[in-house]
Image (cartoon, rainbow over all chains, first blue to last red; front, side, top):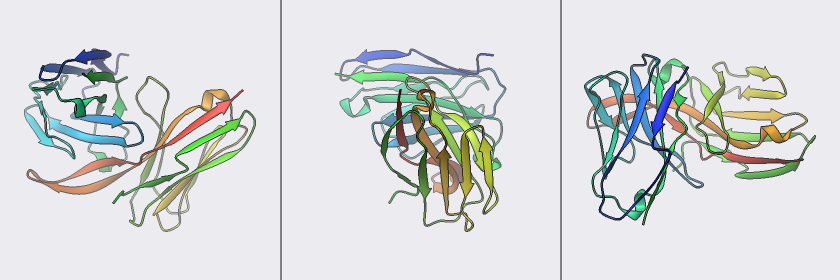
Amino acid sequence: NAGVTQTPKFRILKIGQSMTLQCAQDMNHNYMYWYRQDPGMGLKLIYYSVGAGITDKGEVPNGYNVSRSTTEDFPLRLELAAPSQTSVYFCASSYLRPNSNQPQHFGDGTRLSIL
Amino acid sequence: TQLLEQSPQFLSIQEGENLTVYCNSSSVFSSLQWYRQEPGEGPVLLVTVVTGGEVKKLKRLTFQFGDARKDSSLHITAAQPGDTGLYLCAVSALTLNSGGSNYKLTFGKGTLLTVNP
């Protein structure tokens, strides 16, 4: 059971570079989420998707883009990396919407440093 | 303003001790979730509490939802090094954005627990 798989696990970028963080889930979940986690700041929602072809902004979307062409995949794109985007990024998925008391299943994270 | 306030922020104890961590808010919620995040991994759901005054037990962990459904506590009995991790509470809250209104899971900042052998 793979669950939520994130790649890469670690990455160092230079300022201004771009990259895509990959996220895939094999649980046929409709809802997918991207969070960033900074020390002492908890998890902040970047973008989310309620199904293939539908995405929307979360709390901290600036500097990021997402797409959801399939149910399984939800990549997160950084176009012009900035030091403020140094963080640990978590992808999550859930079968039902957040107010359904269903758990969100998280990947193991991508640790991104921008120098 | 933080929707959920967790305390303490850090807690370091010896193996065998008991501890309680708290998750407080001024808002009322229909349910509240507790997650544990071990180093280098993503959060994992421990429990969901839905009824005011509800108490749920998970081995040595006891979760309580406040009568007014504004707060929750997690009590660990005889802590073990394997309990080390970041304990996060989370609630589903209705938020408004350009796409309309939607429920989002909002997390507290967490309590970082270290249990020393």
